[in-house]
Length: 108
Image 1 (cartoon, rainbow, N blue to C red):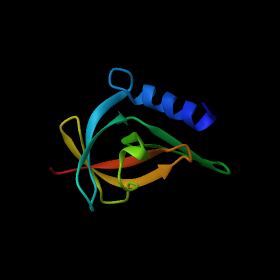
Image 2 (cartoon, rainbow, N blue to C red):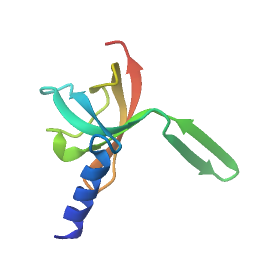
Image 3 (cartoon, one colour):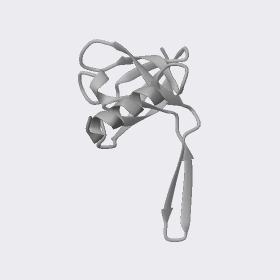
């Protein structure tokens, strides 16, 4: 087993239900909805520093496995989680087969 397989196994464990993962429905703008397991967080904090200025931002997001989707997440896709509808604002892939997808609340 190589490094990519080990990393994928670790990511699956972390996102599994009962650990950090929960069931969500991903609704791409193009294609059919799919039910996947992802790690959801409403309190993710992002810190950016530029010289003497530091900015902290709290943004809801999900960490998901790209192989669970037919296409990579794009702005405008939808996601249902915890009884709330969310829209994708931004997706950041990390080069290991996962993506942190930043969300905003929307009407169902």
